[in-house]
Amino acid sequence: MTPEPIRIPDAFGLFNDHWSPKAIAAMNDYLVKLVRVEGEFVWHAHDDTDELFLVIEGNLVIDIEGNDSVSLSAGDLFVVPAGVRHRPRAKHEAKILLLEPRSVVNSGDAENSDMTSPVEWLEMS
Amino acid sequence: MTPEPIRIPDAFGLFNDHWSPKAIAAMNDYLVKLVRVEGEFVWHAHDDTDELFLVIEGNLVIDIEGNDSVSLSAGDLFVVPAGVRHRPRAKHEAKILLLEPRSVVNSGDAENSDMTSPVEWLEMS
Image (cartoon, rainbow over the protein chains, first blue to last red):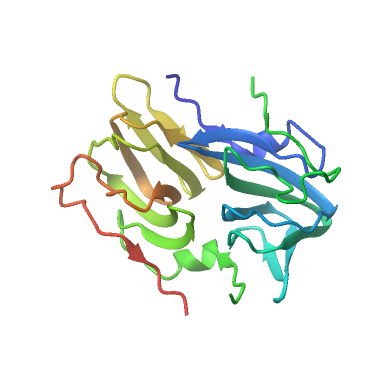
């Protein structure tokens, strides 16, 4: 093992696309991912897993079906419980850290959405 | 569900003790914890799980048995693999986010250390 920390601000400098999470670290059966978001994602739910959002920069709104929306700023953390339909959206670009099981599809039960993307690891040289 | 985000900087304002992680959120069988650290922790390993460190403020060094030490600053993330003996330390106070399975004992196999503390949830009113 070469112990190399992951510098999150630098890692965000390595990609520019939106709604396409990049895995940066594994912890047991989970992946830590970074994603840039802007505009609206699709409404979806993950039936089998909670989903963790940590805002690194900018502002994120998570609409929650049947409930109030959640407004998050840098330094705010929120866990969407399994099975809860939600829609992340950001008026301006925001940088988000996600934690999800390795098996998760980003668009949950909206699998055929054009927002669906496979797990992609960020290349850090 | 009342959707309430957790504001990490505010949450750190609710406690002052060192080396005593406070759970702030659950995600599946995992807990997100905040901890203030200063000085040296005990050498220990978690045989059954990786451990994730994300530095929120300050600087953290993680000594790794048989390897180089890892120096982390704010925004840096590091995962200590399961079974790897390590010792976190901080010359000055640092604020750290941890991710661990619910079952984890903070001092790992050094269970009888006076650094051992039970899982404690942070009261956020």
